[in-house]
Length: 254
Image (cartoon, rainbow, N blue to C red; front, side):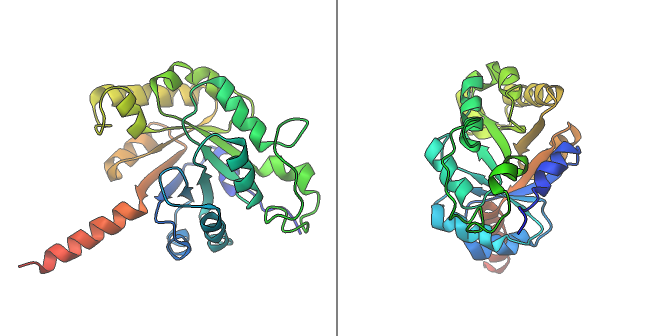
C-alpha cells in the first residue's frame, strides 16, 4: 500500500489557488456532504469547535476518497496534540497562534521524526494503515504540509522570520484574533486591520511561501484571491446553515 499523495501541498507548490470551507459542526455526515461539494480543502477545526480525536478520525474517514483535502487545526501548538492528529492520518495541519520563528520551528519539529524532530514513533496507527504503507517513515514527511497561523501584532512583527522557517509551507492570517489584538474586537473590516492583512499577505508571498486567510463573504474572498492568496476559506459550515435556515424561516413568517 502506498502513502496517499497530498494534493493540497502539491497545488500550493504549483501556485494553484485552493478554495476551502471551514467546518465547525463536528459531524462526519456533514463533513462527507461538504467533501463532495467541490471545495479543494476542508478545515476540521479543533481550536474553536467541539471536535475531539474520535470526531476528527470519523471526519477523516468520511473524506477519504473525497474531492476535498482535509486540513486539521489542532487546539494549540502542542507536541502531543500534533502527534495524535498525525497518527490519525492527517497530512496537513494548521497550527494556531504562532508568534515567533521559534514557535514555528517547534511546530516543524513536532511534524518530524527524530533525529530531525520530536514526533513520537508508533507503527499501529491509521496514518500507517496499521503498518501496511510501505516505507512510511522514509516518505511521510514529503506528504506532510505545515501551515502556521499568525493572528497577533507580535506575529506580524516576526512574520518575515516565521515565513522563512524551514519546514513551514504556508502562513495563514487570522483576521478575528488579529483585529482583537489591534484594539478592534469584532471588527476585522476596520481599515487599520485590513491594511495590516494586506501587508502581511504581501510579505508572505514575497517570502515564497503560500498565503492563506478566512474570508468574509464572496466579495472579500475574491479580493484576497486577487491579492495573491494561495488558499482561501470562503465560508463556515455553521454560518451557511444558520443563514439558509433564517432565510427559509423568514419566507414563511406572517
